[in-house]
Image (cartoon, rainbow, N blue to C red; front, side):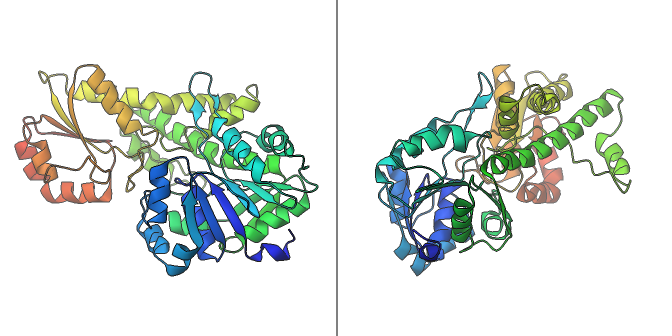
Length: 405
């Protein structure tokens, strides 16, 4: 397969979840013939019926386009293709804080019988550095083909932001890394069919590392904000007020403290750096510990605020890991509620954006017969309702107590 032949491809996307499905949709929209492969038969059926299980109004609009419906099909096993894109999860092994690459290995093995000379394999999953060379390459070469010679391998880290998937996947710059220039150029040609951001070419190890750097930067800065907040509380001063004043300095931009870090990226990826070099990642490790401690600190604050209430009944609002999304992966708010319940607190947990967790009718009704309202995630819809009906909510609470984090 040559660069010219890459203009329209048969593309197999392994994994059609938060990362793989948006990529498959955009590739199909660009005119490629796409097969989405997933072991979950419900997902396969949904795609073939034109239904999105990954929430996103704009994504559903793309799914409904005639070109996409014609070009995108789904099945449970791979098949022959020009390009294979692997977009499977890489969860954290919480016992030893290392990447669980089982699904990457299984996905790679699954395509080996279908590989032929000239194929391009792209890994989008977030992985520790050297995964392409030390994990994937030996598996691919079990086919008898040689990576960088007659078969090609590249790493292009996913660019997905829950709540704004459509914009991010098109407009963000993309890192494309490979051990050889031909693989890089082939991958760039594939992504140029729908990406409007700049395509930045590098080697595969750097591409793997860059994705981890991005999320680690966020994690470390969030940890700084959370640690400053804890210090401010010990001094009995307003943490946000102090941070806002510090941010008036032209070269200071401290983030807003929160309840912890969630999602599939920020609380996971920094550990992958420590995995490859623990001696030189002490700051990264400390940031992870600080942010992982936050749910327990929030629980302590809630317990302190309700210590004079006998058997407090708590309404907690917010289950997503960030405001204005329905994504609950690694959500610190869910951990906070779990910890409270484990200590015997009665907690009713709601989130108007998460399926199955909506209010019975209104937020005010949800607070009836409760003693305390705890806002863990400040969705815009929650803040609007609180602003409009705060007095009504205070009136129905047994104790007029609203805690916002």
